[in-house]
Length: 162
Image (cartoon, rainbow, N blue to C red; front, side):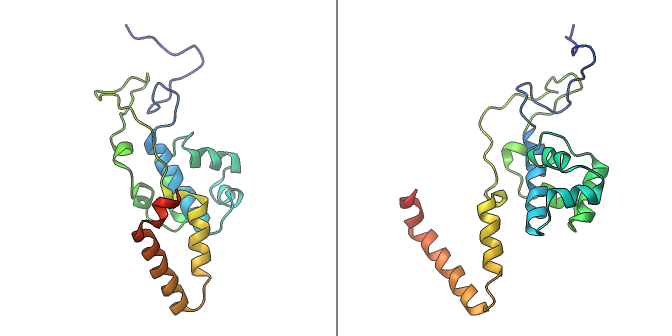
């Protein structure tokens, strides 16, 4: 016999028993944050556009709240990307995350351990770097900076600095 959730509380489908957000929800949320930030849009503006508070947008971006299909469709329209954008570049660990049933039991999947590494493309530092790069008006300067960055990364100097 299965234990049922405490009265008045429903188990969150898809949420691992650890209470941590599902890695897929975290990834989708990070993609929402990435696109919103690249557009220079605040959480408040995004929330207004889809009828949410900025706190709800924050929860979506952290993966604390799951984004339903209709909301994902609304987000894709407001952020001007296809729905598939939110699933692009998903780490293998997230895609292989177990799916829980209504009671929070893994539905036929073995539990997987290991930490979830956040996407470096979703980091604020990366976004600021990309924005600054595209503010360089001279294409030849931008191209030289691009080549310099690649050369430094390939030389191993980056690893030595870490």
